[in-house]
Image 1 (tube, rainbow, N blue to C red):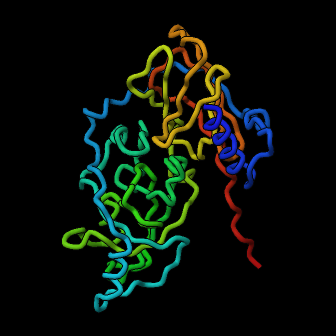
Image 2: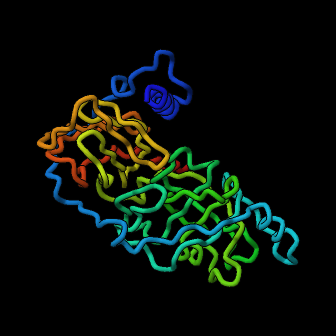
Length: 306
């Protein structure tokens, strides 16, 4: 656990400062400012269990190198100009039905809430970009760079909700509605397209406050939580002063030294990649809307007329 905690602090330092924290590591909470506090009623958010949710199917296995070679060899199928940062192949691997707001709980990011803008526009990332789960909830802009697209250069913004173990490098598995909107065609008979993509700020596309999902199967000695709808990556979290450990399943686990008193209350602190800390007092450990959100970045001013 000590090794995992050290890694968590290091990751938080990377996100905040662009380099590893000094040794011994600096407490990220101590070096940040609490921007908002509140008391939570723990009643506004109650997601259904994964078994009751109409969630997406598992991503299909994708051989990105083979697909790229196939496109290169096909007459008239050469890609259009790559315009965004990362180049890859997008392949559909989910059902055509949009998710419900609670329909991503059994995907790789275990998010208990999906905003309205992303129930149809979501993706799975491979090992190269999943970042041990820290990419969960981030937003990306995709561009269709395939000459077979209805309009090469068309873009869509989507959210990372899942992990694709078979995705090579920058390849993605994407929702069927997103594929249709991006390419202008149905996925059959060819469910893949050449794309480029880049990370973008989630603030313009996310509404509301951060939601916390409590993992099923907890006990008086162990609880775990995931956080959804945050406009920034959550880089560290603590509960009643105990540091939570982030896992590759995107759950933050709590293993306190003493048994957990279910009577509460519980003070939760979460640190965003922007360096801000949100603190909320929870009356109980249940899935809930925290009622808080990180401060969005200031809008970029329009260029002045000469």
